Amino acid sequence: MTFLNKLDRFMGKFLRFMSLFSLVALFFLVLGNVVFRFIPIFSFGWFDEIVEMMFAYFVFYGSAALWREGEHFVVYLIPSKFKGNARRAFDITIGIINILFFLVFFLYSLELTIRATDWTPIFRLPKRILYSCMPVSGFIMLLYSIASFISCFRKECPPPERQISDF
Image (cartoon, rainbow, N blue to C red; front, top):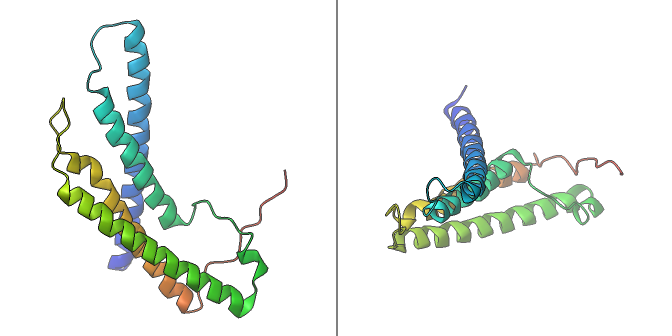
């Protein structure tokens, strides 16, 4: 197994772990908040800080995991109209748009993370920790978009639309 294959497998495990951990943490935090509103044993004054961070991690790392595996939402109305070289040209155009989008997203989220000087009020955590999931996941999605573009450019585009059964 090559280094890139090992890195890809590690990335998949990391992204799935972060997404799952964030979702489970969100579930228990919300459950605890509801329970402790009826049984006031202690205060959840710090609740907003952690929920905000877990939700951001869940959304961005989950998006990167879906992007990596090609399991994100896709509308096949327009691509299904193209065949052969037209479909390949369409896929290459979409690949370029993806790369440009993730490049801009990565650069601006990195700038936001670097410039963030705020601290959370209760735990006194730097907001950079909260924002760090954006440039990391953006960079991961950028790399996978570039890899997909290169393989599509070499005529190894992903298969056409998945068959969706009627309800």
